[in-house]
Image (cartoon, rainbow over all chains, first blue to last red):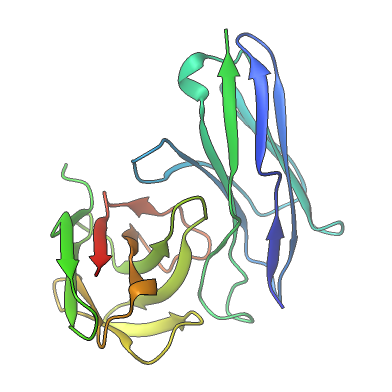
Length: 112
Length: 114
C-alpha cells in the first residue's frame, strides 16, 4: 500500500527550531514535497526533494533519505505566523500512477 | 497574475443530488489535480488531468468524474451525493504533470451534503 506518517501535533516556542518528521512507503518515488496550510486556507508549497540530502530555503530546510523512506522539515527562528499544518506529500511517479499522496499533516503551534 | 480560481466557494446539496465544481488553472499550466480534504486530514487525491487526458485516479468511486477542457480548465462532477462527500474540494495546477513540479492550490469549494 501507500502510506505517509507524520506526527499529529507539535508545539514549539517563538525563536526556536523545530523538526517535523515524515516517513513514507509508496510504490515508486518521483519526489517528496512539503506544503504549509493555515487554518481555512489552501496549502502552499514550501519545498521539494528528489535526491538524498538537505535543501535549504531561508528559514526552512527539508531533508530526504530515499533508502530510509524518511524526510524532515526544519523550521528555524520560529515566528507566530508559522503556526499552521505542515503536509508531507509524495509523488510515486508513473510506476504508482500520476498522483500525489498527502500525509494527514502535522499541526504546529508556536507559543510566545 | 491570477492564481488558481475555483467556483463556487460554498455549496449546499442534499443526498442523491449531483454537483459540478469548476477550476481555472494558472495561465500556462497544463495539469490540474483534484483533491478532497476533510477536517483534520490531508488532501486525498481524486484525479489528475494533463493535456486534457486523465493521467491519475485516486481511490474514489465511479460517482466521481472529471474532465479538462482545451483551455485547461477543469470540472469535477459528483453524482448521487452522500453525506460523506461533505468536504473541501481543492483544485491544484502545475506547469507540467504533477510529479516533479510544485502544485498551486485554489481556495477550494466547501461542499455540504444534507
